[in-house]
Image (cartoon, rainbow, N blue to C red):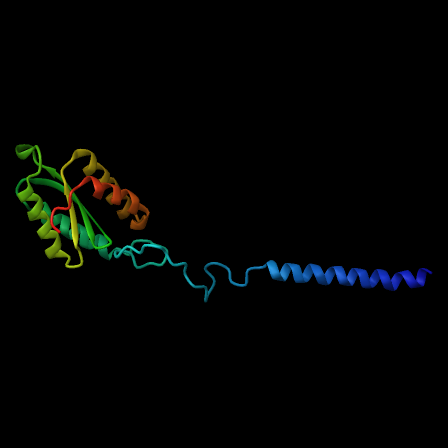
Length: 170
């Protein structure tokens, strides 16, 4: 009787091991993230100033935004400016110098918007503001982008800022 139980026990153990191996193989991921040959995950909205599949800033658009900022600060009554480029749009925060403190005129907004569009022909909409709170938010976002954070991470906040600012030049 002992002899007969042993083959059955051996067959049972082999069957269980086979089931476990098949179960483990079925649950494993054949390609690990970041492994050679793994396709990058597509994002829903790809900002035009990022070309890295992970959404990291490549620097090209940051350099372009800084160049536009330098041009804007050449305007006589503008002390500081911050430009963010994303999705064919530009968000421009302006701090006026002490002599012209107050609201930004439509003429000045149009001048800034035209300057941005001349500097970057892919920009379709320019949002220009001198509102202290919005300028502070734009400057904060600009600093984080310069530190390497992806612009796509600020899309919702920039959209909200855009809603609060009327497009200067369409």
